Length: 273
Image 1 (cartoon, rainbow, N blue to C red):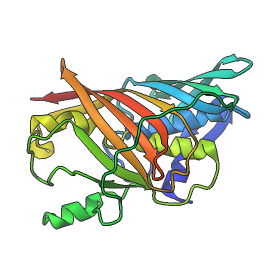
Image 2 (image 1 turned 60 degrees about the vertical axis):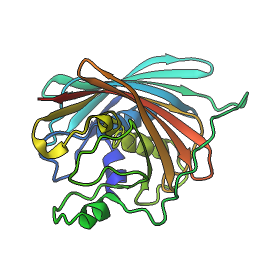
Image 3 (image 1 turned 120 degrees about the vertical axis):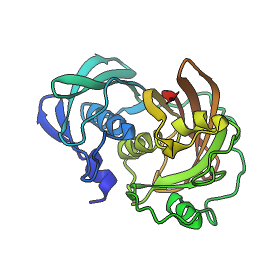
């Protein structure tokens, strides 16, 4: 079983109660995308025949990677076309995260979308490990279950002032199959990986200075079309504003054939002491 599928393979422990685990090797705090994906998976375990079209989440406390996450699902509404679920993630008897998700019976209707930009494709671009090696770094880092190839990477070990925009190609490293829910949860996992960074690009901030404090505060996703997240997707991101120690970020996620499959937004804590 791949690491990503293992993360999403949450354990049912009672009616509408699930338990999620963190991969070995995490020592400081749980990656936010993991909690998003596990909570959405828990909501999907109580859904039949409907597809998530939107989710909104708040990060309340940092997650402890040494213990499991308890996921409690509340069945808010089961309507004729839409279903609502609320998921609370708990550790040490306290809420660390909550998520509200809405699911819809698939239907057809009006359609339009913005056009996908045309940056260089993923072939020929370096992933994050290759970018570090090209800069002469011998640092060993965890290999994530998501492959990321930046189109316009920030030079490794440097902190130039750049525009508050970036694009990356990303995908799951292992095949996910045709299941819509699994692919959405994998995409949700990946959507938190680079979005926060966008709001730091115009400020010339050195990640290794020891003076930077960052954390995701909230996260929202809208799913427009099903897609196979084992294939390359383009994540086009921008940060319209930073203020009050917070950075606001937006993202559009396109399949390689140009279809807008999801949209994201996030506000994050960005402090430099």
